[in-house]
Image 1 (cartoon, one colour):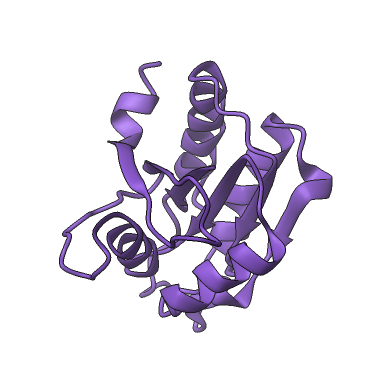
Image 2: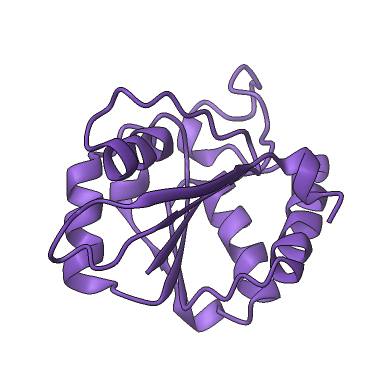
Length: 165
């Protein structure tokens, strides 16, 4: 199983008076354009996700919708409250094992949740310092999360590099 962890694109700043609730901050025009280009770059890298799980926060949902369109997965885009910034990674892993086993799964979310998820899967603890930049992607591979909730960190790529693909 391949697990791709992707952080949402560049969003409006929290200090914007228009958005009092963090969950409602949308992508900026630049963030949207970058995610479109990143999605195309990921497709060129031969990613073939079977489904996309996303945080329901607007910026993550918009990022996931762009990816779903590029990968023709609009019917396989699932929003999950577990993927909010303060989501519990053990619950995320449990939910994947019970409900979303696939050959390739693309998870769109936030920091610190994504880094903690990568750290727990790759190192079995939260000591592995990983920073996934906005629009960046981390790839992990696991034999069977049902038997062993551990994975190998295959690669971590910044949006700047993906945009050059």
